[in-house]
Length: 280
Image (cartoon, rainbow, N blue to C red):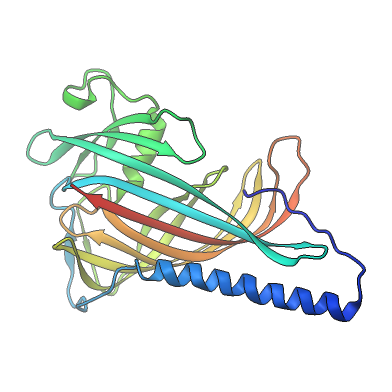
């Protein structure tokens, strides 16, 4: 996840050691509060309660130019003569969009995906999105922007789901809905957010719905055996069902290993997930 943990506990005078460790812990916690506070300023603010059902995704696409999603992973390391310090790393994925209408209720999208810790050249993904739930990767025989097909069909299908809703639907103020999420870390963590409508908002003059979301999920893979917990908000564009803004904080606890033959090591990490959409 983040650089290997290192614990260098010394045997200095107990009073001095405890004082250093307590003060360092306070500084690390204060740093975490600053990060969360800065990101909180980016969170969507509800300006009107939601009193009746709203239909989402009446049209397949909007004036969206780019979307970036980042996951900040941090933990506390203890080192001799230094005390407790926060070690953090941010993993970010940005996707640029080029879209072309394909009939009255569909759009063909070419997405250029780049990662901060990935290959220098972006990955090109092509997909078709419509309001009846047939979002899919490009296939042979497609025309327009889809004609060349996708470099990675499975990745295109995943992206189609993560962009937002995959079909037109009604959202009721008293009902929960589920949204997928993928944390951008070296080992992808896929989860399903449980979300409840919190109210209406506006983003670039567009009507949106703000959802309060939580995740509490166990993840077991060849490299992860962890419990992931997140809490925060998701903002969905009403006309298109696209998730415009996300801000979720929480933690990841359990054990990880950096490769197949590595030893398992404990993980007790703080997480901040942030997504922001740029408009044309």
